[in-house]
Amino acid sequence: MSVIYLLIGISICVAIGFFVAFIIAVKSGQYDDDYTPSVRMLFDDEIKKTPKTEKQTIKEKQI
Image (cartoon, rainbow, N blue to C red; front, side, top):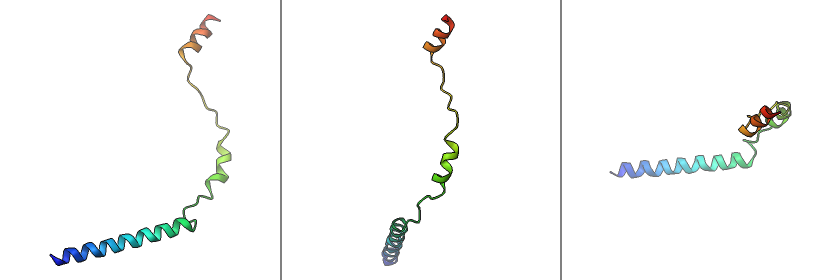
């Protein structure tokens, strides 16, 4: 039974270690995206089609 307590303690220490490493990586800019903003301007000119509503189609039929 004491082995379970030992394994739980070790797993908590490992989890805390990974969490600290993650926090350090985030603060140092490891996950900052430098590539997407430079490419985003290439895709801004896409034509966005809006679906016609019923009122628009009725007005077009009347004209």
